[in-house]
Image 1 (spheres, rainbow, N blue to C red):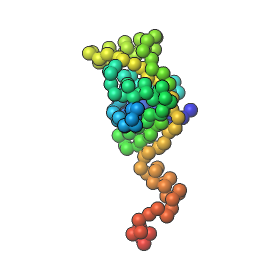
Image 2 (tube, rainbow, N blue to C red):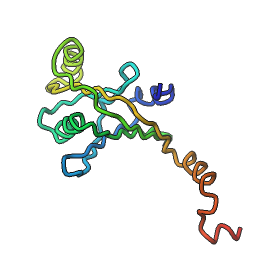
Image 3 (cartoon, rainbow, N blue to C red):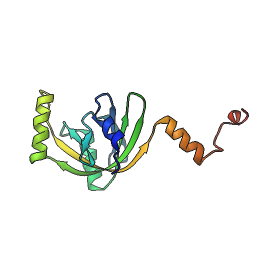
Length: 151
């Protein structure tokens, strides 16, 4: 299981910033916040409210050609994780869709639900600065500014 308890907890908090980055057929990056990103069993799930959105189009492209997309979550205390995911399914009907459609109507009076995207985590990277600094100092101890070596 790639999504540990800390990541699960962060995804459940409303204060956590959730960002989804996709690419189009020309490798142009499209990055947006997606508050609807959430845990679903051992996968991630996100609700797409706009049928013709750039994100929805790019997710379809990524699913067809097995490209990964990236989720970034950032907590209030600056703990952050990058999660590489593969779009598994775009759900547009059936009981799972109906459940989230009903939930969407309750939460967002005027919103529609275009799709429920199921995303499989492939890799999780802790991007918290203090963690990354430790990793870099172990991997590359000589990558320092010369003025710091004199101290």
